[in-house]
Image 1 (cartoon, rainbow over the protein chains, first blue to last red):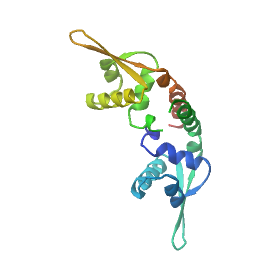
Image 2: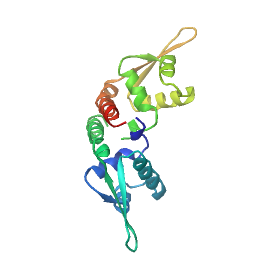
Image 3: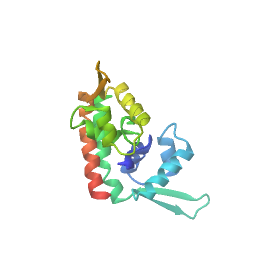
Amino acid sequence: MAVIEGKWTTLILRDLLSGTRRFGELRSSLSGISPKTLTDRLRDLEAQGVLTRQVFPEIPPRVEYTLTDKGRALGSVVRALAEWGAKWT
Amino acid sequence: MAVIEGKWTTLILRDLLSGTRRFGELRSSLSGISPKTLTDRLRDLEAQGVLTRQVFPEIPPRVEYTLTDKGRALGSVVRALAEWGAKWT
């Protein structure tokens, strides 16, 4: 169950559920998150096989994050949480 | 979305979804959790209106935790997470 732990994880998943994102796109979408925290969370999720990280050899290097099937399957959890949040918060 | 954050929260909710529990029952069910962490998590959940805490004036005092309607509504999130966990971990 640890996959969903961590303050930002659910919000990162919500963003990636609508498609591949670059680091900068995630950072600006998640107001208040520090670059280090975002890097750590993305590394955790990559280690758990929830997303893949692709580096494009450009100057500056472009890095893109994409959910795996395992990650997309978390959509049910993120939706249930969003529905609960809409009703109860 | 912060309600589900925290390593133990989902497991505490899972236990309370099957009914009122005493502190000791939760502690023995959640192997590895420290009394302080369990106390902190229960206090967070109480502060968010997800559960109620009832103290019975006995020696030693008995303390029981029960989900509110808001707490029970998190059942959909816990079930979605358990289904995901069963398939992907």
